[in-house]
Length: 94
Image 1 (tube, helix red, strand yellow):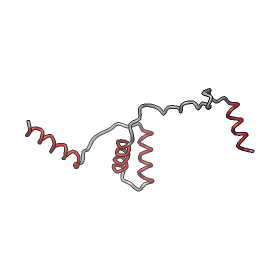
Image 2 (cartoon, rainbow, N blue to C red):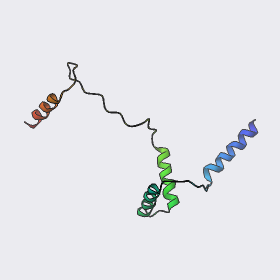
Image 3 (cartoon, one colour):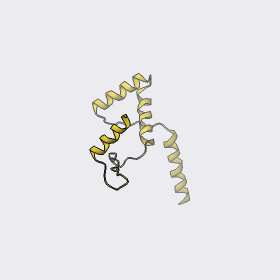
Image 4 (tube, rainbow, N blue to C red):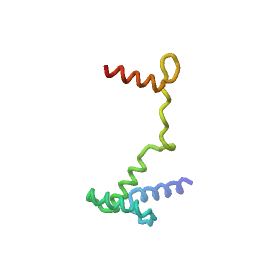
């Protein structure tokens, strides 16, 4: 079992430092944007794709769309109304 794990680990090292050719189907509009980005950054297309993949993999995991903040409440515990907000804005202008 130890020998098997060692050979698996050595294969992973080869993947980490080796180059892999692959075919990926992308939407035409996305590919056009990637090509323009590579051109504007004076990069080869493969380098731009690798960079974008790295950025995507490093980005924090998102659990869906961002949530709206919780409604603010006054010290009395009631929610702010439009009138309260307008009054606060008006008071700040004086």
